[in-house]
Each structure stands twice: as structure tokens, then as C-alpha cells.
Amino acid sequence: MITLDRPDALNALTIPLKKELLGALRAAGRDRSVRAVILTGAGRAFCAGQDLKERLEPDAPPLGVELRERYNPLIQAMRALPKPVVGAINGVAAGAGASLAFACDVRIASERASFALAFGRIGLVPDSGATWFLPRLLGPAKAAELALLNEPLSAADAERFGLVVRVVPAEALDAEARELALRLAGLAPRALALTKRALERSWSADLDSHLEYEADLQGLAGATADHREGIAAFVEKRSPDFKGQ
Ligand code: LHQ
Image 1 (spheres, rainbow, N blue to C red):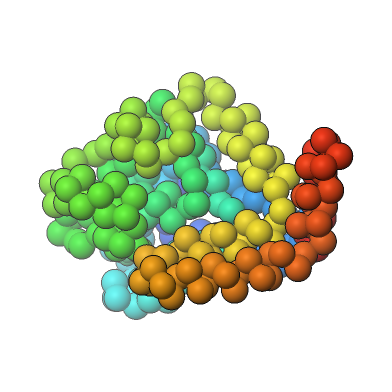
Image 2: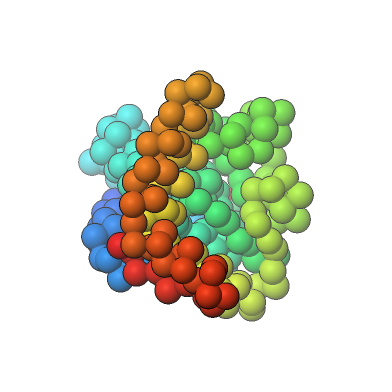
């Protein structure tokens, strides 16, 4: 579990926090014993986005540089991670904090969660993938409403729009997110990684080339010991024991 841990500032993203988060994502990618990652926030917020006070410091890098050097690599690391990322959205996810939530593979939300783009209020454009993820996750009309009007989305509406798999009482979020992550961790890791890759690629592919791509991936998945174990478990009417091989 990766916890953004600056609760007094609603886990607003400073340069050190962004560096730590990227390090934690990369470490999770390298560690073979990690089969799923939970991303959550300490305290009452998931993440309030960029630390706006840090932006007032005289040596704050230009926004374009900050995005290219620190935000974009975070989003890319989450999408390229060959393991599922479960967003446990415990409270408000605003600005780039909402983008982090959108970049998770699945999200489960506390009833106290909300999503707010917030960028418009400070004269900025939604970034860190927000304008890429939102139309895909919510559809173009709702995406435009959120992005242009900066309307927050409640947890209940997020569930209605399919942005989160489930809304749970605040005190149950941790256990429910762990259960979801454990379910994912019990699946065949290689197949999950390839599935994530196929879903990602589908956005920029035509059907014919994507059918080919799926056939290639299936060739890889089909050659794994986990595939053989899955079939054996089915025939023997038992739960599979996937080893990631
Ligand atoms: C904060 C923050 C915060 C610092 C709460 N920073 N302290 C931007 C620039 C650079 C490059 C790339 O991209 C970006 C992307 C972005 O993320 S832009 C969007 C940045 N985020 C926002 O505009 C959201 C700002 N926060 C809020 O609007 C509110 O805090 C929300 C609606 C999230 C929560 O409201 P409340 O529940 O009323 O809490 P609060 O406002 O009282 O905040 C509690 C504390 O957290 C407070 O500190 P204090 O010392 O006064 O108790 C806030 O100053 C601090 N905080 N967000 N982003």
C-alpha cells in the first residue's frame, strides 16, 4: 500500500512527495512479491493536487517543466506498472490529485470521497492526464462538465458513472480496498499485466490491429505455467495457485 502522507496539507503534492511516490511505484514494479498496489491518502483527503504554497517559492520550476519532469513520469509509471493499481479514494481528490485517482486501474471510494478538477479556479488547464482519462472514464459530456465548470463529482455520482467500482463507509474503505487488491493478487500476474497493456493500447488502435495484438498477447499468456495451473485447477475443481510464471 502506498499512502500519500501529508494530511495537514490534504496530501498536496510537493517535489519531495512526488519523488517518493515515483520511487515507491518503481519499487513496487521491481518487487516480484508485489502483485497489486493500493494508492491512498492519509487523513481526510486523498490528495489536493499540487501544493500551491510550494508554487509561491521563488525557485519553483515553470509549470511545463514541473509537469514534464515530475507529474508526467508519475502518471506514466502508474500506467506502465505491470500490476494493477487500486485507488482507495478516502476523501477529496482535487487537481493533479484527481489525475492520480484517474490513473489507477480501479477505484474504490469512501462515501466521503469527491473528485474536483479545481484547475480552472486557479486559471490552469487540467493536466497530468486529466483531459485524457476523463472522456474515457466518464464519457465526453460529463468530462466537459467537470473540466470546464470545475463541478465536483460526489462519491455517489462517481459510482453512478462507473468511475469507482463501489462506494463504502469511510471506516470500511481500508478493508474493502485490501480485499479488492487481494483478489487481484490472487490472479495470474502475467495475464493481468498483459490485460492492462491490451486495455491501454485499445484507445489508439483499430479493431483489426487490436485483434492481432490480442492474439500475440494470448500467445504469451498461453505459454505460462500459470495458464496450465488455471486449467488444472478448473478440471480438479480447486482454486488455482498462480506463481507468476
Ligand atoms: C493545501 C492544498 C494545496 C497546499 C489544501 N496546496 N495546501 C499545478 C501546478 C503545477 C504543476 C502541475 O499541475 C498542477 C496541478 C494542480 O494540482 S492544480 C490544482 C491544485 N489544487 C487545488 O487547487 C485544490 C486546493 N484546495 C482546495 O480547493 C481545498 O483545500 C479542498 C477543496 C481540496 C478542500 O477544502 P477544505 O476541506 O475546506 O480544506 P482546506 O481548504 O481548509 O484545507 C486544509 C489545509 O490543507 C489548509 O491548510 P491550513 O494550514 O490553512 O490548515 C490548506 O491550505 C491545505 N491545502 N489544498 N493544493
